[in-house]
Amino acid sequence: MARHGAFLSAGALALLAGMATAQDAQRVTVITPYLAQPGTQFYLDGFQAEAEARGWEVNVVDTAGDIPAVISRLEDAATQQVDAIVINVDPAQVEAGLAQAQAAGIPVIGMDAGSSALLATNVTSNGYAMAAETAAYVVNRLRGEGRVVMFTFDPFPPVQQRGIIADAIFGNNPDIEVVDRVTPDVQDGGIADSRAKMEAILAANPEPGSIDAVWAAWDQPALGALQAIEDAGRAEEGIVITGIDANPQAREAIAAGGPFEASVAQDFEGIGKATAEAVGRALAGEEIREPVIYVPTTLVTQANAAQ
Image (cartoon, rainbow, N blue to C red; front, side):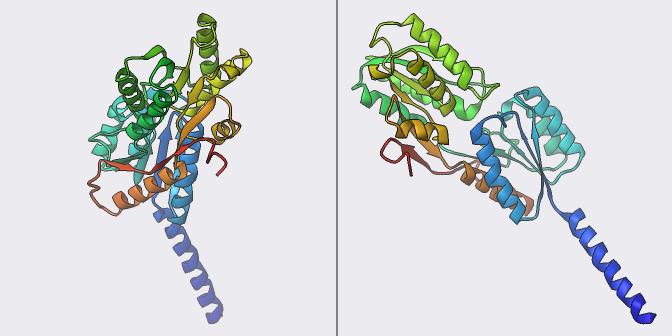
């Protein structure tokens, strides 16, 4: 009986130890309104793989395009006293929620978000460099002269930065004319509305050669523009399309050798992993000195699209 009692005690201790381990797991909340975007999904793949390896409990909250709802979810996470928060949204738009997290002593890390004094750091690609690369590609392909349609999205800082740089490069070439600067609806991911807006632009510019290029701040508008150009029977006009992200659908289009010629490959899973590493540093009590942590990118053309 004594041995049986000892066995039960050891089992109970093991159970209690397991419960304590589960209770002690660090809890991280990830909040984004952009889960419909492929890039965000890839960020999360990289982040969650690293988080799982570290034994964290991760709760992903998608507000489905609702920016004000992010503030409420930040407040919820602060009330729940999670150990860390990751956001994928413009921090300037959710400062009230970030202030709540700061008051609760919870570190907040940006995952391709934007810079803010309320963030421990922001992990992203260098949007300035990516936009410069694709805008310069357009200028070079047009030999410094042509009419360009731009697709931008100023409400999201990483994408807004790209538009600023492209504006500057096109503006520095006097024979480049920006015909239209479009902000598509991204509720459905951005392709459908970009296609509709490009169809309207093509209808307003029906003559061959009236549109020379489409510069898109990310791949979804570029793909929508490509569909509109192909459906209008204008794929052979030599309209040059560039995007940023090099998602699988974009790579396939670039590899096909049609109007979609170039994009920039962000290391989405690398951004997610680097974000998790930054969270780990913050959880360890480290003061992260870099307000922005950049993850390298690669220009993708037909020559390397299949790689």
